[in-house]
Length: 431
Image (cartoon, rainbow, N blue to C red; front, side, top):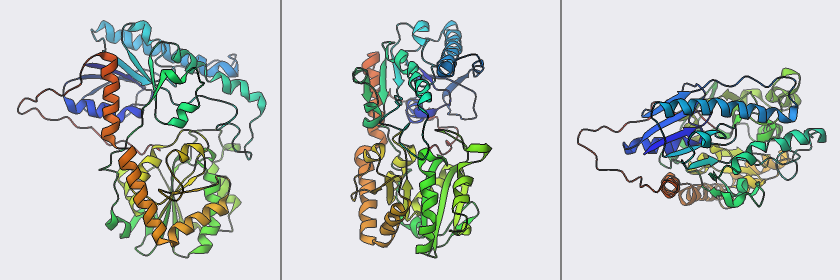
């Protein structure tokens, strides 16, 4: 079967399904993307150049749609070049968020499509008005509503949508939900697994050495920003440090902005909130290693005594799934995306997103109550085994493809001497 994948940041959410298809040694896989260094052996990357920015004359509320239709035009041109080279896919699979897929039905009108529907923007009930510390001017609401123009066009193209959680599906209007299937994303349970020996072993992360008798608190985010509760986490540091002299904290993530607004005056959110507590914590017991390689990231999760995951009502991170699979003792924010994964007292604890002291109390409870700690660690791993198994996810994805194409993805009998192709390099931590 011939597959065409589309995502501006290869491989995006399609890492596991593309790698799975490669191992079958029975399919041709082409991936249209912006240029990047990521590689998967057996996947043919076809890069396109990012479109130029919208002109200043374009209304601010229309700039995202303007960028999307520019991108759609470039991707359609790229796809048409593939077609002229005699490549017509049996199915097109891609992310609908940046507009790349919008013109592909014109290029391949009879080819079924699967579009990843990540989030439906709204001004009430989700991320935009959630945090009173960072209020949004109502004059910006038209721009936020207009972000859904891409969603609306995509939903009316006649393709098939998928989304990874019930909460993300719930953000879409009633009329749209029947057009979107819930397809839970999986975790590699063998790679992301508990390791009791690692929990007792020393570990070096960045400039910090964690000794055997140190208590390690971990926090992970792609970028250290309010959307992922960095302000609440940093404000909890004084109480954590007062509680134990051997307590160390590793806060993993970059200083950029993945979601929400940039820090004022060209600074970083980390600097702003650390300056706020400058005389109240011990900087030598907090490490900010930035972004690290995947093996070190897993070692950090396995060594963690208490792991913190905070988020606005927004898309749940892959790191939450990986922390569950690794059997972390998770303290999560009591927000809708987290409640879909964590049942309080069973496979983690939930605490108010806005309460640093309450967060610190929950962390200390998890650290000091060994019975509770073991219970939620065991519950986290059990939850991952029941709900996040990679095999279940891949099987569901395969069934979706087979239904839409009318073709079986069964692996043919392998010829002697035919080697399995493997992924060219590990992905960077994507949280």
